[in-house]
Image 1 (spheres, rainbow over the protein chains, first blue to last red):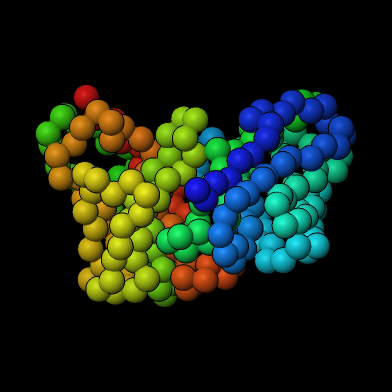
Image 2: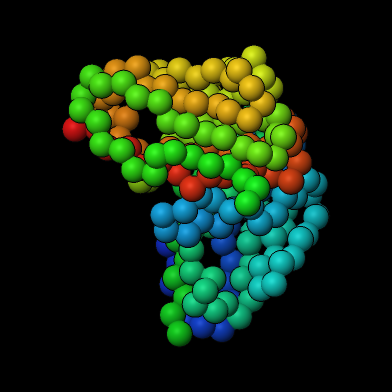
Length: 110
Length: 114
């Protein structure tokens, strides 16, 4: 069964305390691994797409990496404005659609 | 502003009522989809369309209908609302079914069925 699992469900950090979010996937025919940010009451906002193992992408304090089984979203020296739910999604599977994980809710305290 | 527009933002329905959630995009995207988001469940695909006149079912299609008569619009119809359809609904679009550049999501419709 195609599946995307994110951990932890929730993460509380102090401002400046770096950490990583995990996304493990079992999806046949992976075409791409996506990361989104979602603020309360809003739609998900696209962050990154990774296409092959070993690929890395960066945006400000965020860096996404991909292996054959999982992806990590590294947050370096986070700020309170980084607080949000981060969603991971795999493009592929039997229907070739986007399969979402349940998300990691990140809280960064000043 | 370019993007995906969803209306209404909030809606309360009585069990058995029908309604249409509207979705429009002005980016000339071919691929459009509807998701529902429930606490602890993540985003689940309801229906999707790879172009005007072409639609298909996603993971949770029961109780919903879609049509795609134009590239811009992709309405979602609830045939006979049930409390289990209480959720936040998101419409999303992409340039192609390859999802290059990811999805652009609308701001959502929060639906409550009583």
